[in-house]
Image (cartoon, rainbow, N blue to C red; front, side, top):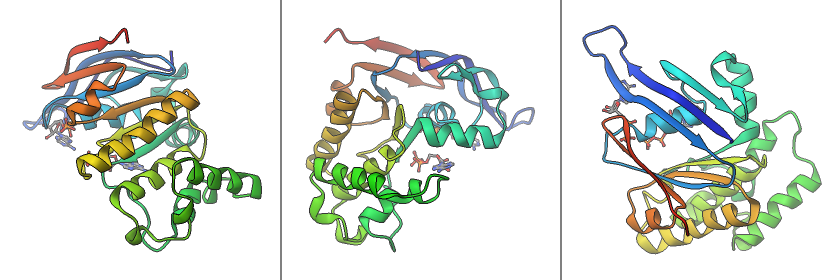
Length: 230
Ligand code: ADP
Ligand code: ADP
């Protein structure tokens, strides 16, 4: 098991009149290598859950373990180290830095890490650009790339530290259907070829169908959690 969440709730504005459960009493066991879609209407609690699974936020109640480590007993620094090593994030709005080339954007996690960028690491990233059909885009700036290409660069950036888990919050939410397929293909390959655990929020029914497991959230609760036998 790579993630275990036990009875987690997130309460916004605790003990005030505006108190509100973003998620309520959610328990999940996630195994290595799963490809999971998180679905549900707007306001259901998907991003709240995403932030907690990604250690970007802490639950108000409950326990969460990632790779057998209790997240709630960690300080901010320990969490940030764990996050950088174990989790790669992908967001709807790509979040590339406009003044850096595609390659430098992808290298950013290495540039800011203690290890730095050496040439084997750089070669590995260039190889990822080749694998994902971006070898002619290395020196281009984000504004010179299509949305799908930008998101692929963001996916490579998420892979640079070789994380066990990829968390994607509506990774195709700003792309048309053709570009969505193009980007999702990459996520599927990462899941298949590298054995990564991939968890993505989506509203796109075509992409929901491609998951091995679908977790439905409504009003902060898990209302169904189905693993397909495919
Ligand atoms: P989803 O991602 O499914 O759209 P969210 O997790 O973003 O849902 O939000 C779940 C609920 O929690 C929503 O009703 C939202 O308004 C509320 N919420 C989210 N963040 C905050 C916050 N920082 N303070 C108060 N309420 C919040
Ligand atoms: P939405 O689903 O509403 O589009 P985003 O996917 O843009 O939201 O962001 C999800 C949440 O993750 C936001 O609350 C954002 O502040 C937080 N976040 C994104 N990147 C980081 C990061 N590197 N470190 C800490 N928090 C982050």
